[in-house]
Length: 223
Image (tube, rainbow, N blue to C red; front, side, top):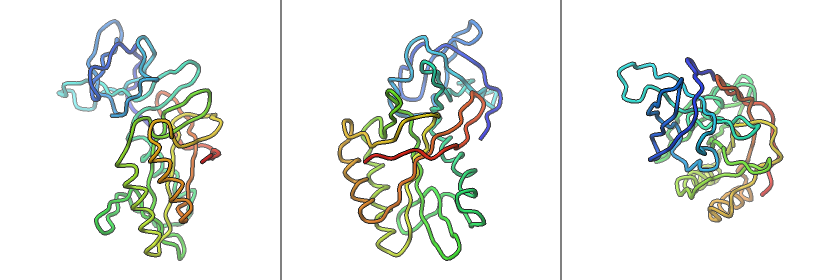
């Protein structure tokens, strides 16, 4: 996936989940944050951020904050990017498959539905931005919605489908992925229970530039 009109800025503050202030070319700009997570370890005062110029010139926020420099590591923090990258990647993982996005089944809506040969697969995507010393974890804040998605995948398994949960790590060259039991132990418990029942877990890192993000390499998962 590719962005257009990327500019470099200096992060100043984030007064709420949706808004940040950044200095761009000597001007202070009010920007939209494309991630409602906490991201406290990413958005530190003075860090370098990358912003996409809004397509609508009439919009109140002229830029979307999409990536951040954390030391030597460039991290995409756009919560829309993992699904877009997955849409480009899944035809490589399931060549020749019929792939549908935002697929409704019963009372649930899944990120992807895949028909691959005789297989019928529901797949959910989670973006991962939390990193410490090369180890990446999810979630960065308690997520009842995430547990709900896991339980829905288990239900699909029980009704005869295959189910996958794909963690898209929005950076490259990490050591391994693990659930964030410190922040939300119930999520880790739900994840381990789901794998015991047959839900398949995948984790891939990404090649990230200020202008793009592409799924790159499979990453070890430690439960």
